[in-house]
Image 1 (cartoon, rainbow, N blue to C red):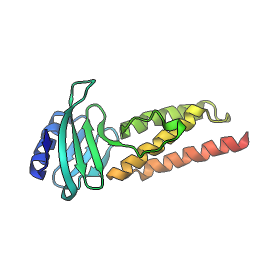
Image 2: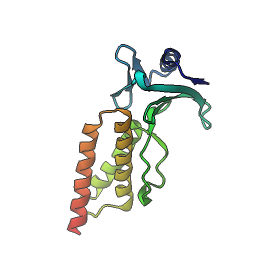
Image 3: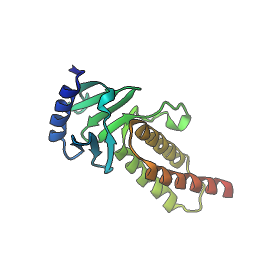
Image 4: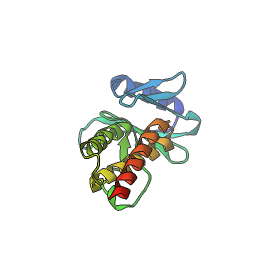
Length: 172
């Protein structure tokens, strides 16, 4: 069901959020979505709104929303997950399994794995999987920044990972 008026889109959004408050909250006063898992907000630029579509997830049979704005900015509201978005098109070997849509919750899941790899073997060269996870995190943050999330604190963490990976490669 494609919707192209802002008023109807806001009504559908409010209805969906009301049913899925554990993953997304919407503040109509400042037009922001709060991604519950990350605690981060994203502004919905209603003046750039193009369409909203409600879809059914093929695996879960649960409804989700896709909102499209100018400049191909699209977000999806999914449960579980929260605010989802696409990642930039990067065609490198470590990212070939990167899903087309991710959320900030995915970043935190991968961050735990990276921390484990780096903490378990502090002086070992980084594994291929650890490097690939850092690359995926970079792609997630690029997608998040593109749709309007402030991820500067997360980018600093990734910069720390990159410095550590470089240190370990240069030592060997």
